[in-house]
Amino acid sequence: GAVVSQHPSWVICKSGTSVKIECRSLDFQATTMFWYRQFPKQSLMLMATSNEGSKATYEQGVEKDKFLINHASLTLSTLTVTSAHPEDSSFYICSARGGEQYFGPGTRLTVT
Amino acid sequence: AQSVTQLDSHVSVSEGTPVLLRCNYSSSYSPSLFWYVQHPNKGLQLLLKYTSAATLVKGINGFEAEFKKSETSFHLTKPSAHMSDAAEYFCVVSGRDSTGGFKTIFGAGTRLFVKA
Image 1: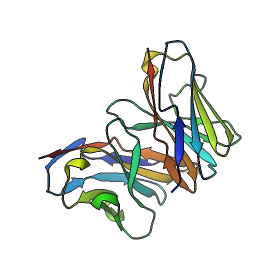
Image 2: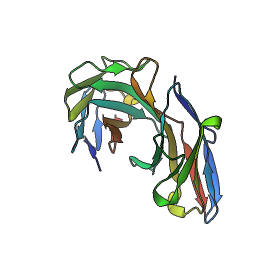
Image 3: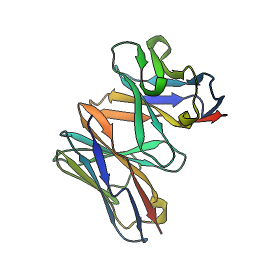
Image 4: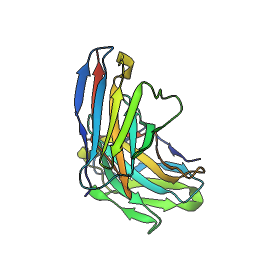
């Protein structure tokens, strides 16, 4: 079946630094990619939707200047958490849609 | 607008007894419905999906779910729980919304505990 990968699988960074998370569709082209955030013991919350070559659409309450999303190709989307703070620590999951929707394994971000 | 409600935040069963995880949904358009399982500190695994074919959907690991349009429900069942079924389960609704955009909405999740 279709595979979506994320890199890194986990990352620790210092407060104030920026972190980039990659999401790749390995064997299909994804016209749309989604980014979700999951806090401990909570559900997944959609952060933004991005279509290849256009600006991402952010959900209400998500700061677009803090969470920069780039979807430059049909197989790659990146999420950059800028000036990260401890409250940004979370599990970030991407999803790619090319017909069906497939989820990546997630990236655990810890900001110290 | 689309929404999904998982009626129980947690369910506890004994090993070998049936499992019922309840899910109700709301959607303006014909949705696709999914159940995913997430083990601790792991990613999501698709259990099963409904996409307007048969209303009784069989998934992996003995799970199945029945789409009931009249009740707007998509409950997940398994005849006999196994210890390895202990995990978090998410009901998910997916489809076009009123703006024409594609949305996937997760329920709050149900934690399944399995007692020996």
